[in-house]
Image (cartoon, rainbow, N blue to C red; front, top):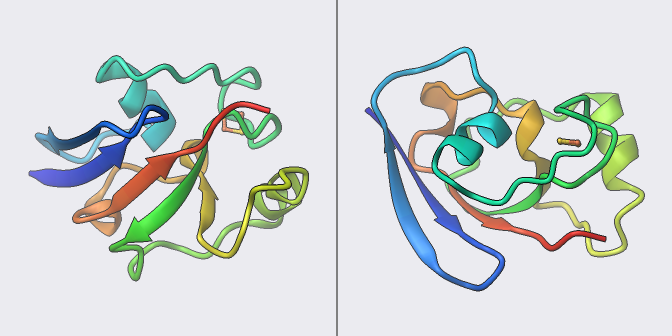
Length: 105
Ligand code: FES
């Protein structure tokens, strides 16, 4: 069981329980939980629609690839805690993660 806490764009906080690691990325998984994920680029790290900030629990996350960093650079509200949900795999590395979804630009 993978548990993550998600704060949506309206400030509502919800604990999600994901039964097992999937082949999906976190953006796709959030869609299955009915979160509004516009994801214009379809998960290619190009649009930043899935921009989120790590509130805590991000110690086990892999470092972002260059494409993710370049796209995050286009967001004026991005900082060192920013990630693209489409670039995070749903596995034990995200267990315990607390994220906040950021607004669209
Ligand atoms: S869905 Fe476009 S950057 Fe993640």
